[in-house]
Amino acid sequence: MTESKARKPSKIAQRRELARKERSPVWLEQRAQILAKAAEVFSINGFNGTSITDIASHLGVSQSNIYYYFATKEEIFLELVRQSAEFNVDGAETVAAKPDSAIDRISEAIELLATSYERQYPFLNIYVQEDARWLSSSGTELQQVFLDSARRFETAVRKIIDDGIRNGEFKSDLDPRMVTYTILGAVNWMHRWYSPGGEMTGAQVGQAMRDILLRGIVNADTAT
Image 1 (cartoon, rainbow, N blue to C red):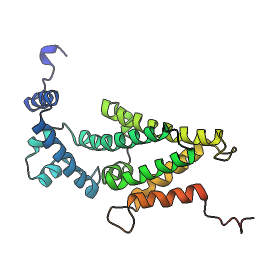
Image 2: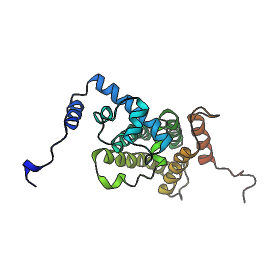
Image 3: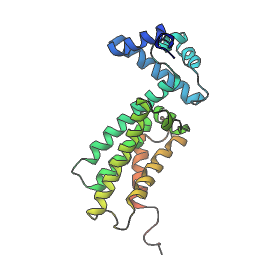
Image 4: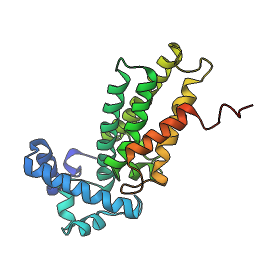
């Protein structure tokens, strides 16, 4: 295909790219409002059940208003995930780098992730509830940001576990990888049963999980 026959970006796409470069306060505010409303729609309908039309209807605007800020619903979805992932990763890496004991640091990391299910609701739930295998296939910059964030969070937790085994705070025969996966798997399962406003706050859930994961559930007096 010659350059003259190549498909040119639409006018709305050109306006979208120009607005992204300028990033005016009004543009940022409107974009944030779209993300907040889109999160509500995704949490109700799921990713596959949501369309740009649904998001526009929920906002009370035309589809063109959405396309001015986002090209696809995938882009909206991934931006919501990116925001939550960055919040968690920054926190986990800060905790992992502290000079505190490994026990204190892993306790704080567990509470941080559990608390984020409250503070970042429903953004984290949106991702965990969905089959996101398509994340690894398209290779866009935003998708790569998420995959990198997931690896960074796991690395931060793994560092704390390694430190604890090395300095004798944790059992020497533990498999650091399995401990890391167990912790992340337990906390991430919150998407199946936790929502803000219930009997426990996110922090309280994190504290309860910390006690179970670090102390276990078997009474030492009855263990065989």
